[in-house]
Image (tube, rainbow, N blue to C red):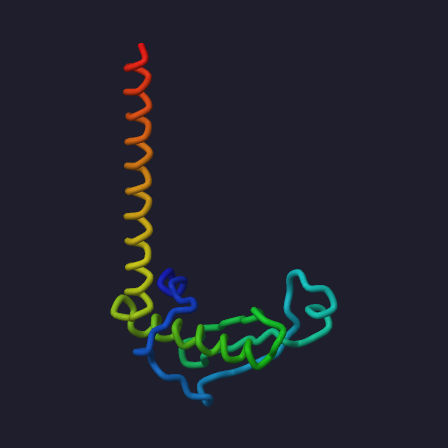
Length: 127
């Protein structure tokens, strides 16, 4: 289950294909801010992959067609992740971005320590 959280908007081309027969689609009212545009229109797409039971809810835009497209992309990534696990391109991309983020944090911490040490040396020189 935690693997499914890695899916998002990635540019993976080696994903498992989905057929329309495997999908169940609903249009519901979205939630959150937006007033009448949100509260009175059914432009939120709920897409379910029947064999795996994975459900995706997409309400990123006001357009039903765009939401349908985005929901299918996200569902395809989640299904790929569900079946392939750690061999999935989505999982590998997520791991690579986490590693890059950790490296960036480490470098920032080193720079901060260096600056702190430099200031201490300057204060010692003044005395």
